[in-house]
Image (tube, rainbow, N blue to C red; front, side):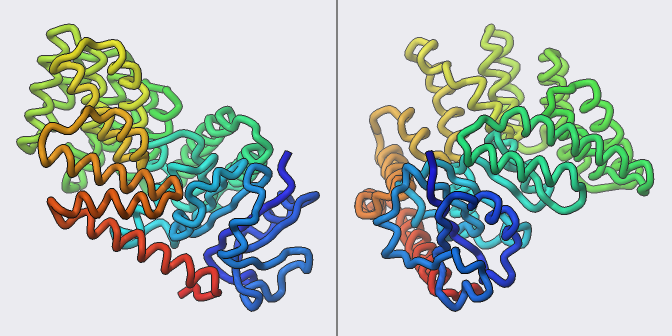
Length: 396
């Protein structure tokens, strides 16, 4: 049973866009904002302000957390609330590299993510489930996002709502496309919706239309952007040979051609799951890579194939901002490079567990062999400094 709502906001109350949702979620619960008293001017009188120092006294197991700015991630880390709802306005979805690390880590830890733009919505779907879009373009879709956040706060599954929203967005986009000038990117987005829904034939039709239109428009990167996506669509349909051949046509760089050759070798040797996992990885669908190969390390005997499965899984977890999951798969380090990677992952994992001193210690150990760990320490410090400013009401 939850009795408290703690909001980590991105702006003062007068500009806060989620007031209606807070009002509904806060019924029967205590609502407090990590903000200055001045920033809460005009808010309902029952909403209190709190400082960062107050966070240690919060009953987190009975608390729902709402975060609307990525820089709060290390203040939330390790507290294990009953639910973490990330509501991310579209204007806060992009930034410098250190900011994006915070953004992705916060989303990876969330019970539910509600994004404000379609592009980041898709990006998150390729890394995790339970993602929703609320962009103000379609009322029915926006209401589904609200319902999902409310259900997640109540401890209910939102998987059915996530699928329902994907279908609603696909239908909404189809309606829009009837009155719009054809666009390769719009067709591609429609293909992605159907791919995420597991509707292979529809996904393939839209992807082909996107590719053909891009070619007719002399759009750069049409093969790598649109045609390559057909490879995972065809894999989803169970057409593995067609999928690998499709990817092979799109392979341009040395890395891509090497991956294509590896896919063919794995397929020929009967390692279909590993070949498919590699194809998903080369299409940056890390959610599918992890889902497909999650059991492989326990099922494969020691040797090159197991090592390859582990390396793909580790990368999928890293790219999905789950350093703890990646760390658990790493074998004992045998080289300086492997030790550096382990220490880096330890530092990042500890930071996201709220163990800041352990994080800095691990990163300092890694710093003996490179500068990247020092950058990671600086990034954590910068995020904590930004969070302090947010808590004091400095939002610019």
